[in-house]
Length: 159
Image 1 (cartoon, helix red, strand yellow):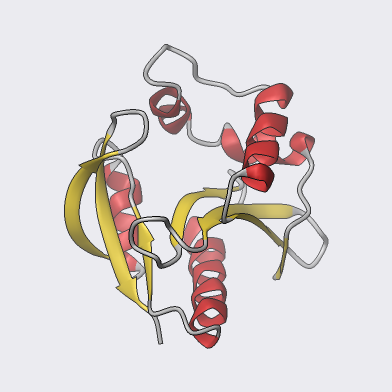
Image 2 (tube, rainbow, N blue to C red; image 1 turned 120 degrees about the vertical axis):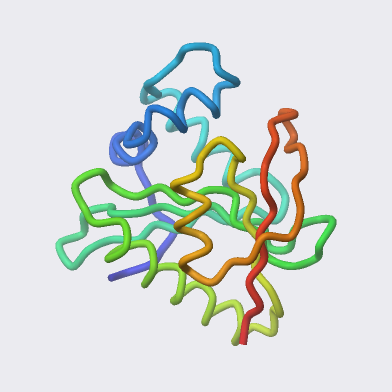
């Protein structure tokens, strides 16, 4: 797997649309179940211009985008890295792609001196919550995100 920052809207939209439940929750339950190319381009742009935001792409040996992560480094409140989103291609196994990508990112951040990683999946998305917990993230507290959706903050020590 190769981790870099280059992503095109045409390849990201496939990952964004892999989970219609997430799409609907992300759009504040407006009934939208698919993102379009403009949405994907806006997501990339926001990830590039937002302060402390980084967008990482994970590619297989053939160059196919198999996952994408957004990370705030550091998060303004916790002053530690915070995963904003993790998207996985619908045609690949989540565990085979996400877990190694997370480990690589966590090792990189640990080597840079960061002490913990945070993530806050939406309370309504039990499958994602379970995935984070399987990957070593422990529940800290419930919060409201910037869009007033209830999320469950999780933390994983690094190093």
